[in-house]
Length: 159
Image 1 (tube, rainbow, N blue to C red):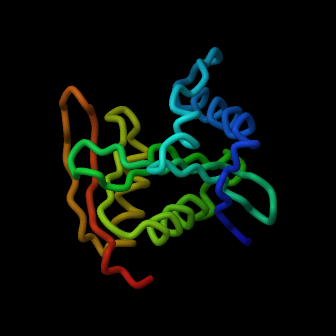
Image 2 (image 1 turned 60 degrees about the vertical axis):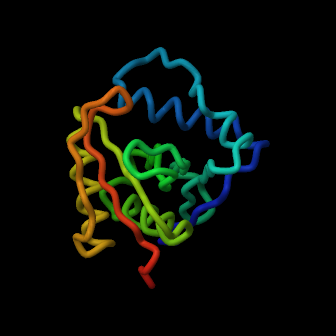
């Protein structure tokens, strides 16, 4: 299984937008979904990076990286990570997260909505393994975020 990340070219913006809608329908449990309001910013701002998750040359998901943070100033953040249902529970999400962390060494902040219990479990396990449990978790209720936040710095990670 060859998992790779491919930066999304602006010509593929609509394809990414369609995948984001699929993701939002699933997490929001809604049929009618508004277009992702931050989509254009991934080509307009230098601190945003959209990637397709590729498996043997086919797109099976996406990951969006930016510097929006609520605790660590200018920390890297995975704002969205989506793997299509049929490819889940195979270690692909964990593999993708580790590839992204390696691409952008430095401070990181990962956030999960309070109601998304499975996301919190996933991220605590992935970050815990990657950082050998050297991360901090916050239970935050503020005007910027209501949920959980894990912070870590992978500047000195060699893997």
